[in-house]
Image (cartoon, rainbow, N blue to C red):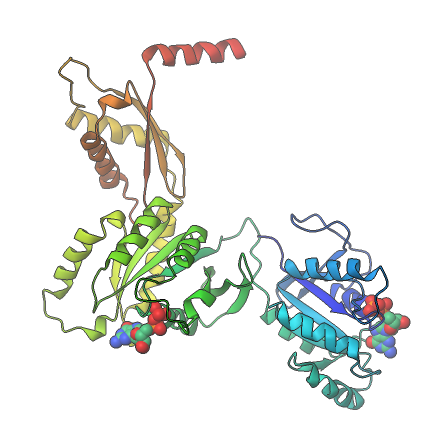
Length: 453
Ligand code: GDP
Ligand code: GDP
């Protein structure tokens, strides 16, 4: 994950570069070696408290006059803003708001990036507050009086700025877990989202997803960061009547694609529907980990058979994700909601798990000796030479066999069951690839290797 970027924007001469240097604490540490960073801008590493980020000076932004230079500068600001998690708009407190400031502010508000407003050149504390107050009219929220030259006021500004930045996780530290919450309308997705956010108080900040429209959120529990994918989509209320068939399935599909683990939310009152099955199918197909969350558990009458009946219904109707753990919760009362993240952790661990080739082959040998592959009427018998895990997320195995056609669906399912029984992988789909290799192939393979060396 790259460092979050902060774009500094404003008219020429308001003090942008002075402030950038103040944030970065140096004039010369100019680097641009992160992927996605454009070479013709200067990025400076900066930090405030325990948070790291990059500041980029966008050059003066001018709208009112139109020398031929302008489109280029505006282009620059726009592309800087595209990769930025937040922007600092700088204005000149001594000159008061100008038409140019107003135009920049209007434009910025349309970009959908959080903006913090720095009213620069406010050396005098008393005067500064009055000077800053004039800039409320820009509609960008609280104007912070600062002095780039003296450094006064920048602390408050940075306090607010870092609130808008995603938490930076260096590559070698714990990776964040990306969660998609999917389900039909009204199953309680946004209620669950609010419950997560309320419970895990630590840090909640909107971070940009793949598009401005899909706003992700981060929630921290212990030292694990969870990214909740497309919370804007979850919270978007149905102001338009799309009809009963529509439930934003494409948006859900996109969220699934970006997730490590999917919370498939089912409504306990309605039971498992066809749409739930569709989502389950996609989760399996995309190879994502999954937890089935049966919500509104408070809303149904229960006796000692209720859970059992529901389990059976899920077994029968959600067989695409038969490997997923399930949990019965109430977003309304909070019952068992904190346990959801425990299941998420466990599912993700399995999704990322790797087992050694010797373990794979132990399981295979054992499975084959219990139950040898069937022989065809022509007397040909399938043979499994060996297997190995070729990748994770989801765990995928290649099994080298004499002829894949000799190992039919039934036998393949038996082997897969043996894998699950012996190796677990609860919460994640697994993949098996059956590759044909004749004895001659195997020998030729080693011969080729020998001649190449
Ligand atoms: P930029 O064009 O927006 O990057 O602005 P600069 O950082 O180059 O500053 C423009 C001018 O404003 C320079 O003459 C700076 O010395 C002056 N300036 C910058 N910050 C301050 C400040 O906090 N107070 C005062 N009084 N002048 C400042
Ligand atoms: P979304 O469309 O999936 O985001 O669903 P919402 O979170 O907006 O919830 C839809 C409705 O179900 C709201 O009226 C919620 O108050 C209600 N609801 C959500 N969770 C529960 C729950 O656990 N129990 C009950 N009884 N109602 C719930």
